[in-house]
Length: 327
Image (cartoon, rainbow, N blue to C red; front, side, top):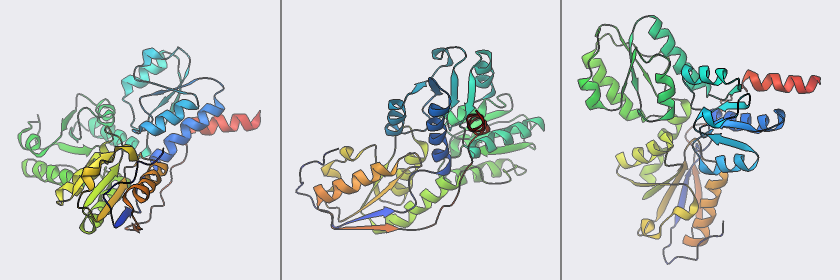
């Protein structure tokens, strides 16, 4: 993408959050699609965007992946990949009834929440799912035990929700929420339900936490924060919210071309990070534009934590690899 013409606005420094971009679940999901395109010997369909990033989806589409929202769009007997966000058992049942060859790319951390929901429902708990009702991850988790589960999205809802058995309530969370907002919601729930049962391990994923903490570390140093991510990316939107909660202006962008000159008026130090679904190539695109258009002379990275997490490929892909090697 060619840079915009040189601007009259100049920025002295660009500070990058070193913890940014792809998490282990996203890396795994993309690799699942790429491997399936090689191993499956035909069209591969993906239910929903494999991750919430238009650039990534378009690149995979160019390689042959077909993205659909409804299973009715997929020919019977085809290869079908479930996205990293997970699906409910109703979707799995429909896919099996249509004789699809299923590959599950659900992030293992999302699967953890699904399994927790199933276990709590078997114990007859009312499960309060903290999350965004219209987010595909929440919809999938809710599908595991809809008769036992209710979604709460904010403190007000937490303070007014009614449950059949107040002494037997547990909570789970969407993996990509704001740490601070979730903490406030849980506090409100605890005030109402003193015996509230928490997950054995925090449901908000490590990458979401790390990226939000990196934003908290970077905002004291910058005048404006840009976040690379898709409009429908929950974790990317939360990064903007974290910066704004600390009094720093923030804008969500999908590409470098989205940056507006008026945002940078009076900005001497610009911050940049990216959500867990945004590829590094788009980060470097922004860095290049800032150097070329706003004469940024200094680019620094702020390190807060080193991520080493890695998730293995799903068994469906592992079995396909073994079959090909044994052929």
